[in-house]
Amino acid sequence: MSTATSVEAVSAWFQGLQARITDAVEAQERAGGGTATFLADAWHKPEGEKLQGQGLTKILEGGTVFERAGCGFSHVRGPQLPPSATQHRPELAGAPFEAMGVSLVFHPRNPYVPTVHMNVRMIAATPAGQAPVCWFGGGMDLTPYYGYDEDARHFHGVCRDALAPFGDDKYPRFKAWCDEYFFLKHRQEARGVGGVFFDDFSALGFEGSLAMTQAVGDAFLQAYLPIVERRRDQPYGEREREFQLYRRGRYVEFNLVWDRGTHFGLQSGGRTESILLSMPPLASWSYQRQSEPGSHEAQLTEHFLVPRAWV
Image (tube, rainbow, N blue to C red):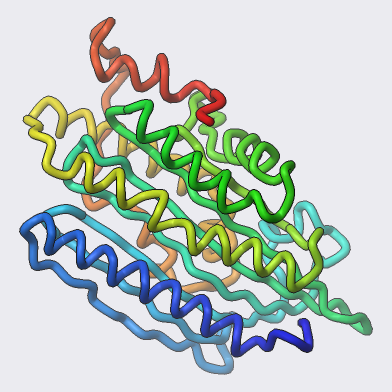
């Protein structure tokens, strides 16, 4: 841990980010004619459990704009890094660790508004007899049900601009990493139109890597809210709603089968209710469903779920 930036200061920034984002979501609810607010569920894991620490889970359900929006902060410590965290760092296997971060998934009600995910985190591990090893991870990605080029270009443009001060290589590298990571290997299908993703990052030193992670977190509202405002009042019917629920099933599959964050939380003994706040309130599955050729639904897989240079 840097002497210039304390654990408390980093934790305070994460908590402030959570508050700014949830305040903005509640403002979107009011602007959309709703009254739903976040339930704030503070939790604590005492000494003696597999994982110790505390957090604040904020969840909004049944809103006019957001059917379910979860945004969690956690700061935990454990005696041993779980396998999901050491697959790329085998030298840290068995090391005690400390982790903190903010993770969110928002599932809008209107099928024309995309689902969004964002996560920013810091992990520090201390191998026996050695100094702590600290790294960062995070990113954001967009999962539309009905795609629009202008939405994808806007989202990627904000991601690119947020990373620009940290090197011209960061956006192309993290964009490609996102396309590779958020991919349902069992279906050979992308989860959405991507964004940026990075993990095990410490190349800029502690202060620089923290600053880059903060820049990504701070850019989230600018990347997502203009899309919500553009689409939230777009008329839709039963056909669009049914397709939304079908595509949400893909989201569930990815989070439970492939997502390292979900695996890390469950393997380390984290709080299950908070870990699974990413799940949609409703989802469905259909056997070998095929969209009508030329339809807006068919465009999703033919045009938007194909990795491309959006900016």
